[in-house]
Image (spheres, rainbow, N blue to C red):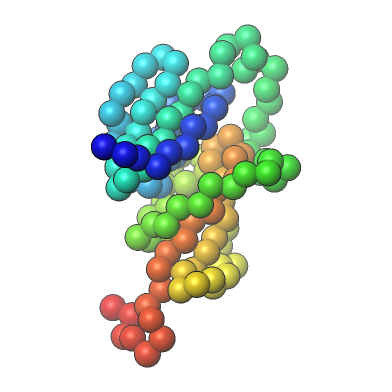
Amino acid sequence: MSQQGLVVFAKNKPRVAAFYRQALDLAVIESEPSHDLLRGHGLEVVVHAIPADIAAGIDIADPPTPREETPFKPTFVVPSLEHVRAAAQATGGYLKPREGAWHFRGHAVLDGWDPEGNVVQFKQAEAPAGGDGG
């Protein structure tokens, strides 16, 4: 089965894996000390543990500071931005306030970040113009 995928390197593998699992409603397919494999909805996320000797030199602020200097920002279409918000709050991540959403190609779009500050964008489809929204 083909899957679109993302690999995230994490200092705290369990916490980061919980964020992606809950925010994207993914199942844990495999969990090893080196990585967690999460899958669902045509998507595969591998959360790979950063080796302890390297992780020791990485400081993660509490709450995490967004790592906006990276040239990549994964984007996920989700059924509910509020579901993502609840998952972020439960796992130490963050999703910007709903009133800050911008609207692009029929989606409400918000940025957030995982528990280690990796910036992630989430998009929820909006009701078509003239629709009843429900």
